[in-house]
Amino acid sequence: MRLPVDVPYVSKIFDHEVLQALKIAIPLVVAELVSSLYALADTYFVKGLGESAISALGIASYIFWFAMAILALFNVPLSIAVAQYIGAKDFRGARTSLGLILALGTIIVLPISLILSYLTPWIVLVQSGSSGSTLKYATEYLYIRFYGFLIPFTALCLDTAIISSGRTLYSMISNSIGLILNIVLDPVLIYGLHGFPRLEVAGAAYATLISWLVTLVINLMFIVRMRLTPIFKIEYQKALVLLRLGLFAFLERLLFSLGNNIYAGIIARLGDIAMAAHNIGLRIESLIYMPGHAFTMAASVLVGQKVGAGDIEGAKRVGSKVIMLGTLGMGFIGIVIAFLAPLVATPFAPSEDVRKLASIYLLIAGLNEFGLGLTMITGGAIRGAGNVIVPFITNLTCLFAVRVALAVYLAPLINVIGPWIAMFIDIYLRGFVLYYVYSTRFHRLVKRVAERVELENKSS
Image (tube, rainbow, N blue to C red; front, side, top):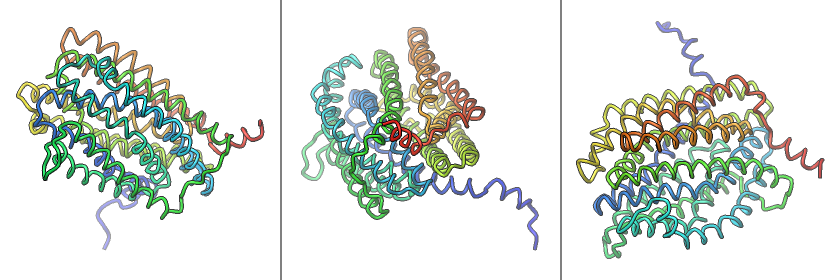
């Protein structure tokens, strides 16, 4: 019996590369949703402590994301290197890259975490201008997160190696177990249930840190099972190549986080209600853009593996397919969230004023997700090809020249709606610029890690 549909056409849409992209991306969608639920769980459980606690969590999150920029110095080159070495069937190259990144990262991250924990009260005050219970809660939360900074660094490095090898199901499992533990620990430590002390916002920080530690252990077990255990061998030329790749990624994240902190500071100075609404909207929106991170990683992995294998045309082709899939998916979910904005915001809002503002944020953000998907996933594909300079220039120029500048101008005119409109314009502009460069200049973007290491060896 013949099917009354054009099966070859369907097969062409869902070809081997699309199915491969979905195989990598779907577990990552779950893993990234799980990661976003960490922050959402914290927001949900501290809701009972009032608006100041929610506002403090939003301020602390922006500052912590700023500090997390240091991880880009290690995770971005690790992702590129492992994907390209796996594509070239050079497993020893992947293992030495992991060992180098873990060693270099520990040496750099440990003292930074101690310095940041010491400076926490000053950092919160300068960034937000907050006072009273908001300042107290934000300081307590950040002190704990900074002091244990080495734990998420190590867990994320192992997770990056797992993802870049294409074994994304393992990432989904470890992150899901960590989330379940975090959800269990949050109310226990925040409100002092079952005989535990009442730690309030600090309890949310401890719950997250413990969950990260468990995730680290599980990731290490998977690394051993995959025979991807790190080789701690000093290779100066490779270290130099990786750090050069990481430098632009680090500067991009650092300056991008700085820009976002300036942006958040503009909103924080509009009052606790505005900041609480922004934080609630941002945490709910993370359910959309975290899956975008999944397709970003899928694009980076697949493009990187094709580049490592020397198939440049195949790299561009598979990257384009992942960009299409992820962008359309994020756009669809965004429209749903925009339509349901008042309903979605209600469970997280401690007051009617916060609920109304959070609903407006979700309407704007929901319509913004198509542009965000285009920006994120195209940037991931370009980085997978080994190029970190193009995303660096594009993202930073648009962030400061459009988002921050417009937010400063519009905030006095239309309050918090102004910065949200500035965000909308910034994201769409970045997406169109990055995709234009990807589609017209891909062959000029490609940089292979192994070739760079070989050139360094010859020149030394």
